[in-house]
Length: 184
Image (cartoon, rainbow, N blue to C red):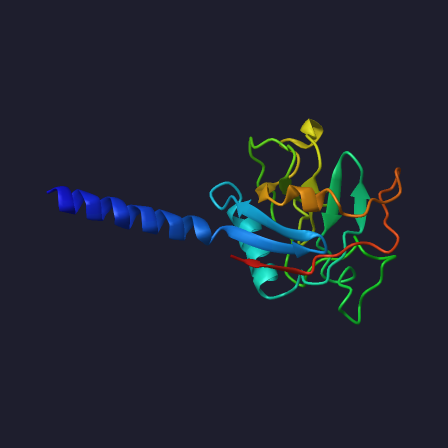
C-alpha cells in the first residue's frame, strides 16, 4: 500500500510539474532571461493568443515602443513593431497587431502589481490583439479594466533595465526589443 501511495505521489508531482511547465514562457532580453507564468484558468483566450504568437516567433524582434518609468513597458506590436520585419515602422509601433481577430476582455480580480503581464488595448475593452505590457510597479487604476494573463516570476531585474521613453508619452527612441519569446 505504501508503494502505491508513493508511486501516486511521484506520478502526481510529475504530472503537476508538466502541467505547470506548459504555462511558463521564456523571454530573452539584451540583459538576461525573464521567466513568465501564464494564467490560462483566468484568461484562457489571451494566454492562447500569447502562446501561439510567441511559439510562432511573432514576438522575436518586437520592440518595447512605449516605456514609462514607474509604470510599465509596452510591446507586442507584431505588425509595425517587429524590427526584423519589412513592415517595421517605429513611428507606427503601437498601432498594429496580428492578423488574428481582436480578443474579448477577460477581466479578473488579479491586481496589476509589479511584474504583471496584461493585454494592451484601445478604448474598446474588446480590442486586445497582440500587444501587452509589463508593470514596473503596482497600477491599481488598471485593475478590472485590462486583461491580466500572466506575471514575471524571475528576471524582473532585466525588465527593469528596458530603455525608458519620453516621460509624458512613453515613446522610445532606439528601443530595446524582445530577442526571443517561447514556451519553456
